[in-house]
Length: 416
Image 1: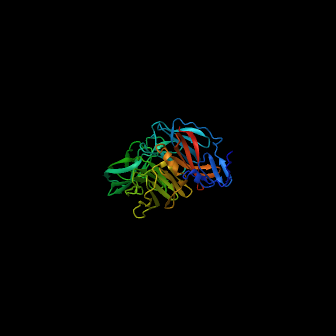
Image 2: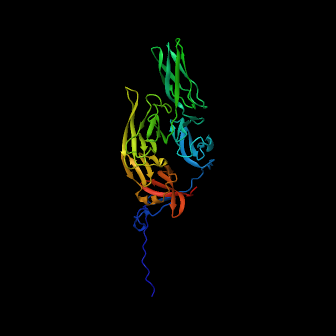
Image 3: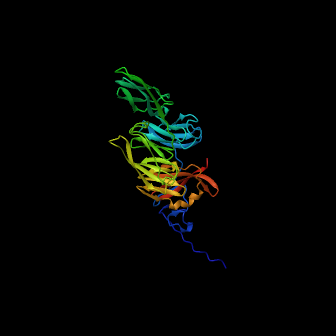
């Protein structure tokens, strides 16, 4: 006797809700997907394949790229690529032409970061090679005036002028200053332009144009700072190095000597390790550690002392990220990935947004770079993280993409 055929039922759903890999396949809700790759669930009855971009110029960089970022300089859009041999190249996106920014060994082979300053240059921080700038033509070490020492104030000065020798690098800017006279002796040199492009401390010449002053002897040192991260915020350049954040004087990227510049060292136990990165967004400077988030805000000048003051607030004492390239602003929030999830910081509240895909995290190779950013797909602004993923023994680059409280994946093929 033939077996009775089992009754079959079918369900058609057009309510595309994105990936849910957390629940068992038989337990996911109608409209959810056990896995969704290279397919974007846009809305009800609307799901689209994510194809490779069309009509995009094929740019071949000379070496393996370890970091990429974009910036606008003099109304020209650039994409910058820093490479594993310490060189750097750029692509002029208006013409899709490739240019050389720096030769091998100019930078470290990892952990470089850039930020745009106004729209006339980029600022570059390197953990070992220091602080540099590129204005579309010249790459310069900051090498600005760091301190001025009066070794001998001299005598009989009436109207002295101060002259600094020029910088050694092409495109650098010569420092300037003014002498303060007390009892006909040079008491202080006030820096009016910190300069940049110096590779060694300049000589300082004091000339008395209104009298017979002589005997003054002044020397200076250069500001040279390594760091893990750089940001521009409230008209200043900010550099994170270890647990310390240095900031320039207002409206400068190179003056770290005047009274309005300074630094703050975070000593609180909420920052368990060094600062991972600093990012300016939403009228805050976010300071990320492995397990913490602080914000600097309300930056202003003390009207009495001329010093810069600001508020430092801890927002999270248990959740943060040590992956500097996995943190970015998205609308009014800050999104970031760590080893156990993806989070959104909105205001002072941190919320996990990766519950539906949490089971993939044990298969992510966190020894490989984690990168992130905003991506426009089908005219929808999405948040995207790229990482190396072990898919049942096959290693590949995967993007986890988030929008409208939904997740889906795309991939770039085998690890390269």
